Length: 356
Image (spheres, rainbow, N blue to C red):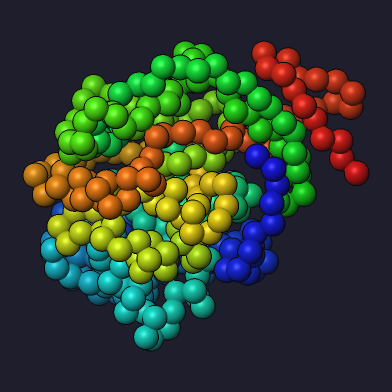
């Protein structure tokens, strides 16, 4: 993948964002003690890491109400809330469109981080995470996952493994901030990589079913030790970091991508949809260097409605459906040092771009 300039809102954000991103942390919450405790714990950690003024909070109450968080905490931290039934991205869509008539999020934030309440951020290097997000130039980026959550089954559709086709290519290039990077399009037949490529079954239209390969979605989102971040065609709904440029395309242009009673299917198309709309090679990135702990509370158990939403998104946007592809694997210096006039013995052909 070649370095390319960002444009429009993405370029404007890149200029404004230095080391301290301005965040809106968006949580769907119930009234349980563990949820209240985890949200407060995460927020304390984010502010201690990125600064007290780093971020605002928006809470979508699908159970319980604001009183459970404490009046003083709510007043100091929460800038908006919604209550009712539904799921994270239906709430977020409503909140975003409402804000357009009041104070648009684009004027206040660099990113919206859509977090499930069972994500623990307190072991994550957030400064490094957002540095990698910036360098990736992705419209949506997601931290990779460790912990119990990576073992749960996920409804990616009816998936099967493709016959592995050996691919090996590397290129050292300059990242957007001027540092050098090593990009790997690695051999997916190598078992040491957890990002084995899977695809939609060509023989089945029942994308609401699950199969043994469905767990590959979680394997895909585990950290790859060979990469700092990967450009991909898939980032899952659990903890995506959305740029301001992505929001109107997802919430207004991607018609019927979000349903009233489920947001399944959205993450299966949004990376390729955004790449197409923005006319760039990749819409998404996974940040391998800074995983988060997915606690896996299993709060949204699959139902018939979920699978129906998945099928409907697939019917309308099949051309954008994810194949769980890693498009590039980026290692940012100084993690990798390429000495002058020497190659790097990683078992692949190396092509270097000389600096200067």
